Amino acid sequence: MYFIILILVLFIVVFVISYRKSNGENVYKYMSKNASIIYEKYAPYSFKEVRQKVKDLGQEYTKKQYTLQVAVFSISSFLVTYLYFYDIIVSLIYALLSILVIPYLTYLRCNRLYSEFIFEQIQVYTTNTIMEFQTTQSFVKAIEGVYESGVLEDPVKTDVKVMIDLAYANGTIEESLKYMNEKYDYYIVKNMHQLFLQITNEGSKDAGKSLENMSLDIDMLVENVYRDRIDRANFHKKFLKFGIMLYLMVMLVQFLLGVESYVAMLDRPEIQLILHGILILNTFFILKGEKYYNENVGAE
Image 1: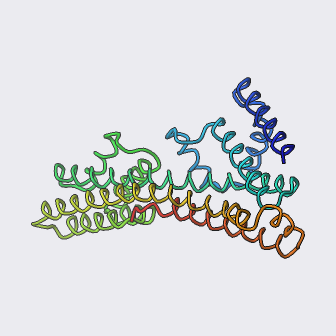
Image 2: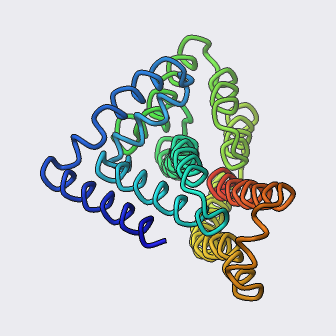
Image 3: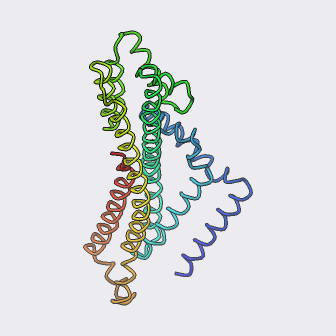
């Protein structure tokens, strides 16, 4: 046992020294290079755009943060699985497998940040379009004003420009609204567009009141979304603590049975199979929770 701890401590010391001397470059250089090659070859084009936008927003992890993430995942996996099996080889295999989870977590995180960014842009688009329309009394002039104001960022800004071009090319706003509705499936977008279509085609004596009510609806939605994000972030922290406790339940088992009795049980294949199943199920449970937290951002 002391030999295992000594090896682990030496590994951490070597990692820290090399990391501090070279800002982590020697540690991750080879892995980063090959990971980038694989990413560029196999990552979907849509996700490349998502990740690039996250980088542009300054919210992408740095190489140092990714390196520390690899270290935390591998070392934690090694320690936890050693408590399960008391086998260095098995623990090293799990440590390596845990690193493979990081790209998936990165994928989930980038999609969440991108979804939050898009929602914020949609809020800006709808709110400012309503404000501009109250001045111009023209939907096309309103979105032109929003586009030229500089409050929007790509990809929403580019899509608004497409709307403007479609409106002038067709002489109507129907194609413009259809294009935006398909790109951004938010009910506030569809409801606002439907109202503007009705006002444009039929006119409305109560347009000002209707637009005011829609602005209040948007404000209420935004407030609910941000409150939901805070609640979900707090729940996420508790969820991760619970997941970690599930992994460490083996310590309670060893306390009740005694370490010697527990180690003796590890010679039985069915016990080994059960322990592997527990680790896999716990990991699957945590990954499902991470998927839910990152995908369901509460925008609609």
